[in-house]
Picture (cartoon, protein in one colour):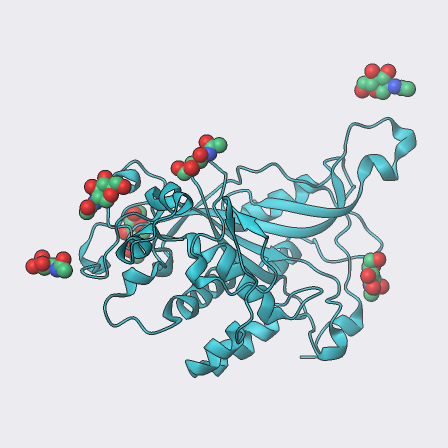
Length: 318
Ligand SMILES: *[C@@H]1O[C@H](CO)[C@@H](O)[C@H](O)[C@H]1NC(C)=O
Ligand SMILES: *[C@@H]1O[C@H](CO)[C@@H](O)[C@H](O)[C@H]1NC(C)=O
Ligand SMILES: *[C@@H]1O[C@H](CO)[C@@H](O)[C@H](O)[C@H]1NC(C)=O
Ligand SMILES: *[C@@H]1O[C@H](CO)[C@@H](O)[C@H](O)[C@H]1NC(C)=O
Ligand SMILES: *[C@@H]1O[C@H](CO)[C@@H](O)[C@H](O)[C@H]1NC(C)=O
Ligand SMILES: *[C@@H]1O[C@H](CO)[C@@H](O)[C@H](O)[C@H]1NC(C)=O
C-alpha cells in the first residue's frame, strides 16, 4: 500500500505508515530520468533518500533477479498451454532488497492476483476478481506482446495469464521505478503493467539458458546426470557471474540412503535466478551482473543432477 496516495484521502492505517518509508514521497511531476545521474541500485548513493529520484534509481528493491523455469510439463496441455522447444520459460523479474530479503504485494491498489496470500504485513489481501491482465494487454493493442507471453511465459498448473498477474502484483508493485507517480500526470491505466512485462521480457531475452548450457554440452537427458559445479561453470562462462540454481524432487540423501551422505540437496534441475544491479532504471536495461547471494538448493555431489527431457506432447511444434 502506498501511503503517499492514502494520505491524500486521509486514511493512513498503521500498516500503511509502517510501509511508507519504502515508497517515499514520490510526486507525479518531474521525473526526467534522461537528465539525472545514472545511479547504481544498492550503491550508497541509491539509498540517499534526500537526493535520489526514486523513479530514476531503483531505491529499495535494488537487487534484481531475472528468473526462469525448466518445467517438463504444464498440466494444461489440453488447453494448448505448451512449452517452447529448446527454451527455458520466463518466471519473473524480482526487486529483492540489497540485503537479500524481499518485499511483496507492496501496493494493494494494483492487486490483480486471483490467489494471493490472505494477509501480507498484517494487511488483508483480497483475491482479484476482475478481467485478467491479458485483457489489459489487449486494451493496449499489444497483441504481439500477448502472443509472445503465451509462448514463453508459461505457467504450470494454472492459466499463464493468472501467473503474469501474480508476478506483477507480488513483485512489480515493489519497484520504486514502476510506481504509478513515475509515469507523470498523463499516466494511462495499466501503463506500469505493460512496461513491467516489456522489461521482464527484455531481461529474459538476454539470458538464453538453454543455449548457454547446450554450448557447454549440457542438454536435457533422461539417461545422463550432471554435476552442479559444471552447470554453474557453464552459466558463469556466459553470464559472467554465478546464478542461483534451484532443484526440486528427491534429495540426494533420500535417493542414496545407504551412502551416509550429508548432501540433502534436491536432484531435479528446475529454476535459475540471474542476479544484477541496475544502473539507472531497470527499464533502461543497463545492468551489472553479480553472483547469487542465495546458496543453490541442488545436490552438490558429482553427477547428482537430472536435467530432464520434456514430455514431447508438452512442447509446441514450431
Ligand atoms: C518541475 O521542475 C521545474 C523546473 O525545475 C520546476 O519549476 C517546477 O516547480 C517543478 N514542478 C513540480 C510540480 O515540482
Ligand atoms: C522524501 O522522504 C525522505 C524520508 O523518507 C526524506 O529523507 C527526503 O528528504 C524526502 N525527499 C523529498 C524530495 O522530499
Ligand atoms: C533488509 O532491508 C530491508 C529494506 O531496507 C529492511 O526493511 C529489512 O528489515 C532488512 N532485513 C534484514 C534481515 O536485515
Ligand atoms: C556417517 O558420516 C559421519 C561423518 O560424515 C560419521 O561421523 C559417521 O560415523 C558415519 N556413519 C556411518 C554409519 O558410517
Ligand atoms: C551503463 O552503466 C555504467 C555504470 O554506471 C556506465 O558506465 C555506462 O556508461 C552505462 N552504459 C550506457 C550505455 O548507458
Ligand atoms: C523424461 O523424464 C521426465 C521425468 O520423469 C518425464 O516427465 C519425461 O516425459 C521424460 N521424457 C522423455 C522424452 O522420455
